[in-house]
Image (cartoon, rainbow, N blue to C red; front, side):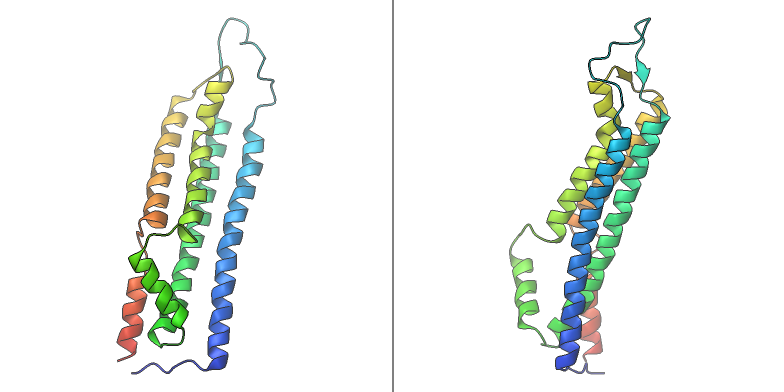
Length: 196
């Protein structure tokens, strides 16, 4: 089956969908920053930095609440990143169709540019934002430990938090910066197969 070229109305609809997806990805990044700010505000202790160590010289534990909130924030950030990744796949479905049907010279040129040159835009820059937010959310209990007279108790919370944070960084880096699970080539091959 040979693909039919999109007519003018089809192109307009597809371009509108592409613009909407790009906007939604930007909104997800903005939402991630907003959620990060709100949840970190919950985590900041209400004691002044100058408060002395409690009587007996014992430090206060960071606590389960801080670890759970930090982990929850990391999971929410990763869920938003996954949604952004799926939107990117949907975006590529439309753009590879426009490329394969010769309906957009821009998509052909943009695809060639991305294949030949490295650039820091769209997915990569948004991934860097998610990497920063995720690293900060994972590191927040440890930051409290450094700044306040706290101990990293319970130890299991610190270990689990560190493991989840490392996994977060590995997957966001791999998916956002290294192209893990990118489906653009698969989609291009499928459109080519349908176009024969």
